[in-house]
Amino acid sequence: MISIAVPAIDRWYFMEIVRGAEQRTRAHGHEPRLHRVELSDDSTAVATATIREDFVENDSIGAVVAGFRYRAGVQTVETSWARPIVLVGGSALGFPTVMIDDLTAARSATEHLRGLGHTRIAHFTASMEHQAGHLILRRRAKGYRLAMEAGGLEPVVIEHGLDQTSAREVARRVLQGVSRPTAVFAVTDDIAIGVLEAARGFDLQPGRDLSVVGFNDQPEALAADLTTVRIRPAEMGAAAIDMLLSGLTPELDPTRSHLHPSSLITRGSTGPALAPVNRNSMAS
Image (cartoon, rainbow, N blue to C red; front, top):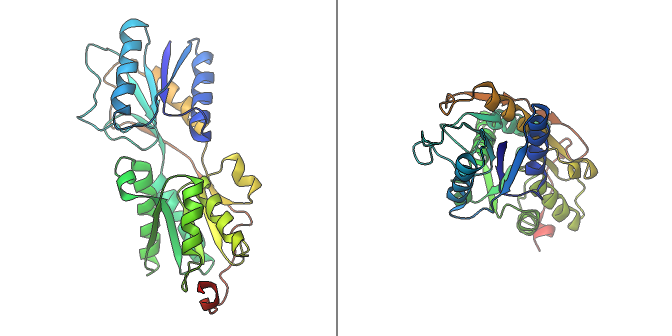
């Protein structure tokens, strides 16, 4: 048996990780055991205890974990467990991990907007407090900043709750400003879609009046004609199982990581920057 722990099974990213991990587990002749541990201040400790119980009492040979805030030297595998853990995503340091290069992908997405002539490019992301525990979000923010600085542009970071509704409400305030952004790089597709919904409320046409780039390429991105960074979490989940089974010792090299590819998919939500116009009427 192989343990799999995630904070949600109703969100596309985690659903796909679980799907890939479970399929690959069975392909190797093992049975997956799925645990959903809701995110909270102590969710990492709860997930760790759940995995430990599997190791000690249910004969699990290892675990794949995604979405929790592991840090080297804080949550470690006790030698008595004698089982390896592999993490999926960039939310951890000091553990073997399957991840994408979020920084480079975010930089490329922002450079795509710069290449279209946009100079007022905002980054919609979670609050700094929320980012503190999520390396993925911090890496995407850094990639955005590096692209802006390389072009001599001032970064504009818009913080909000990490959900579509919060992004939509914040975007409504931002888009009626006098010097509103002409382009947005959003930290996830859900956030990008929230921005697009707000833009349509002001009769701003995506790809003409406002360019928007998301991150993930979940199914809703295609329906929204959203330019986005494509990742493949199902393949990442499968790769984590392969990594786990390739070295069944609790001392898997913590510096070992598998960088999974990503690519920018251009659709109708991005287009060339328009010549500057007076936005005072929008602010009234």
